[in-house]
Amino acid sequence: MIKRNTGFANLTAGYLFPEVARRRREYAASHPEAKIISLGIGNTTEPVSKHIASAMSDYALGLATPEGYSGYGDEQGNSALRQKIAEVFYSGKVDASEVFISDGAKCDIARIQTLFGNDVKVAVQDPAYPVYVDGSVVVGAAGENIGSGYKGITYLPCTEENSFFPDLSKIEPDTLIYFCSPNNPTGVTATKEQLKKLVDYANAKGCIIIYDSAYSEFIRDSNLPKSIFEIEGAKTCAIEINSFSKPAGFTGVRLGWSVVPNELKFADGSSVNKDWNRVMTTLFNGASNIAQAGGLAALDEQGLKDMKAQVDYYLANGKKIKETLDGANFKAMGVEAYFTGNGPYVWAKFPGKKSWDVFDAILDKCHIVTTPGSGFGPAGESFIRFSSFGHQADVEEACGRLSSFSM
Image (cartoon, rainbow, N blue to C red):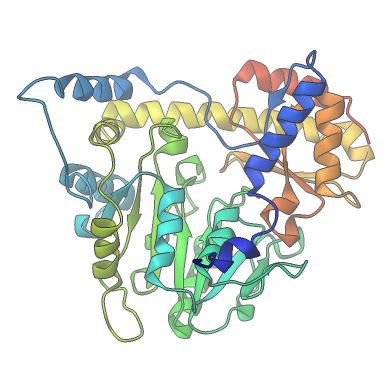
């Protein structure tokens, strides 16, 4: 018999978000009268703008005509969309040949592992989006969970004590570094000075940064960088991954991109860009032509206005949640809530409490689904992530329920 990939055997229990969904289903089944509101998973709730949806609809209807039909496209993506992304998001700092269109940031983060094999060293922010770690375990770049994390992973605690920016000296040379800004789950955005330290360290130590900027459009502080390629030296040490999911409401449409600079090299001097091109042309067959038509519409003048309005809507929800968590009842429990106004998540610490215990208490007493911080890594224990993705009326009702919560 063929042996199982040991990476799957090394994974603990289940992926975080399916586990959250399972607990919600079980609670709903035993409490059918409860109106459950989700402030948990980062799934968008507001409709795609009519302008963007119309572009996809028109393209789809065109497929029924000889003039509008299209089959396979370039695996790397529509050339016009690649060029537009280079212009709009990077102001010419990257070339269109360095932009690769995909079916979403999470998919790219998983596929990127194929570039480095199973003997690469991995470092991640702690807490961090689970796919960085779980994907590393699946491909064999990390081993079994030893209680404090997985073997082979260097965890970089990002806590209130270090202003949520890690101690880079813990990173060994020749390490693959996963870094997310604005961070999921903490919501904290790295400054230009902090990213310069990260870039300089990576270049000096032969590391490569996988920079997840899926929430960059939530940044409202003009002094904060939206891309790592705003930092001098980044093109020789970083890959950036981004998505239309959150700003354009494309979580179900599926459209993202990666930027792999031509200057980025492996230890033997070979091109990372060329190998990523091979991955995209061999293991992928291109993003949906319909979704890419929507992406082009999202980047014209009206589309950019529509995306900004949607992001502002969610940021207003986040502000409301933060105000609620600053209330007297939470202060009495010693809760400290963090919300920067530059990301969609509110990160709240419940001192002395286990994350899953707080999750269960909020679900039971308030009928609200959150996300336990321990699911994002060891440093997330005692924290809860509140998502601002929700209908405004639901968020307001949830905040009303939370205003009397206690443990």
